[in-house]
Length: 151
Image 1 (tube, rainbow, N blue to C red):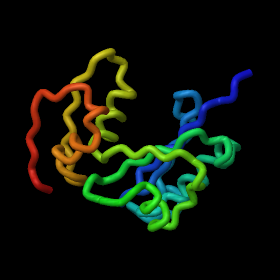
Image 2: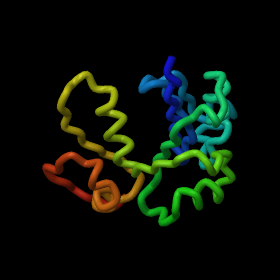
Image 3: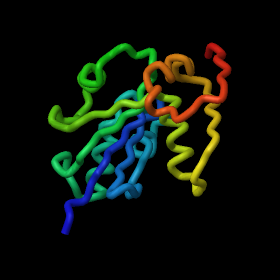
Image 4: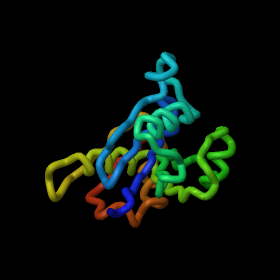
């Protein structure tokens, strides 16, 4: 029997959250506010991460990859953000960062039943689309156009 592949994701922002996937399927996810009872509780997602791991009955040693959304204008390395926010992510765990807007786009595409998608991200937060494309150009299949408006 093959070892399951676990990917732990985090939306580290004003609404802290975590989500755990097993073999490409979401098995548990929660926003931090559901645990603390503080509306829009965020900027540290440790409670949500612990909840997901406990609900699945696993530990960090079982997790293969940690993916986090970040806001492009944060000019820090992934390790800097983890340490700065007092996070519990172990150093041995591989970390992949995707921009705020790409995270929105992929959450729409990933749950879509269609083989092709056109995605528009309209958001009142995060960096500009220019910053998003500069950092994630390999993740963006094609660009038809863009309209950048300062937040």
